Length: 289
Image 1: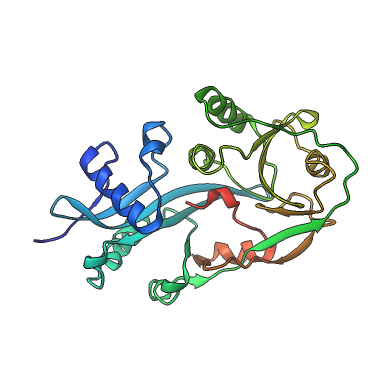
Image 2: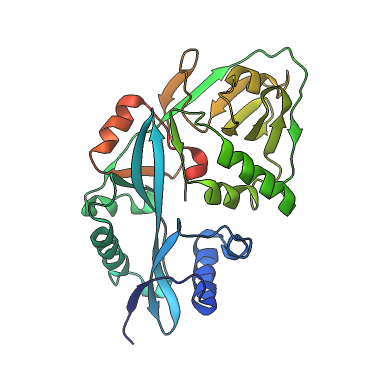
């Protein structure tokens, strides 16, 4: 039986189901509720290989627009790279990658992806190089009482409110995705339903994780430029250390180090990424597709 290569039509229920089955088997990810909730749109485009009416391999394309220190940048992120176990070593991913390269040639400033350790030798064959990101962190001493209000993402009305805030929000980091609402909703409607907070003093919605004394601040949405220190203080005196899932507008007072994540390597392709390294930025954590 021959292979057929195509862009997945997400409205095709049978192929979408097959795609999801492979994603669950490979990564433990199911995209069905994301689709049913209306957030799987044109910014997530699986390029699939089909055999016997089943998806046996995939590389997904996410066209992304970023604002980098006031400059508009168009990037392509590749993700959900997977092959059915008994179809591996057939060159399926290579053929999909070649199709993607052809389709997006001269349509973006660069391409990037995050790879696990098992495949770090694969992507350089396509001209990708290991890239660098930077982590911003600092120790803090907070005297204020905790004032954050958790907004549980378990109701459509709460989703709609967050979406509305995201649409109105101005850029709150030195590198920010401008078309990332659907991807943020993937996170907060699935894994991070209890990680959205409202801070009245800044009229801001914040996505964050608290682990003991450590606050991992993922993203901030507000109509006006926020006071990041006040955002942090709102999480209360138990917080002793803060890490950011983005690169801040103001870097003074922050410790900057190269970001090292377990079993994850950033690969990039395109001259634009030289500028990223000079700016010492981080891809927003919630932009990982």
